[in-house]
Image (cartoon, rainbow, N blue to C red):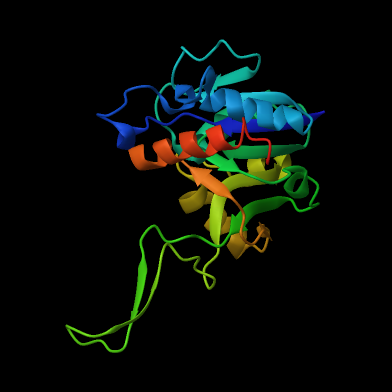
Length: 224
């Protein structure tokens, strides 16, 4: 049995006041929510036990297990609560709002006890290269939303051995701020780097519109 946890216990404040729907229930295609999409994606690759962390009781229509947080605890705290529902010694963990186009078994079968998926980020703004640093100078080149090749970023998908969760998770806090730095310091954190990884994330209304447009073009994510 392969197990996965979808971290979906956020409030999605940056989508408000445009949208008040909780992020897992955002419609990203006709008759398909973001949570529908992520559950289907995991099951396509053989993850047969899926746990969803949540602050709400109105998403229980799905055939998964739920881990309810009574208040916001951060990604580490939410994962700490969900850990008790695991049956095996290894788990795939992902943010509900991070959509990636790759085979998650590459990460799951890496053999590393703690590993994150990573790629080069793409700048949201056009990059200007000028001839000088003067207040007014000639533009030498203009690159629309370039990839930053000297920077590698985490894209919100992870795999952990359960013994790592038991040793490093905090009951209130975030994976990125409170867990990963300690794992890295102890030499236990690895990364799987995929250059040019197609990665969609929903942080604001512009992201939400882009995701809906991308997934409509991809016909329910056939590229993933």
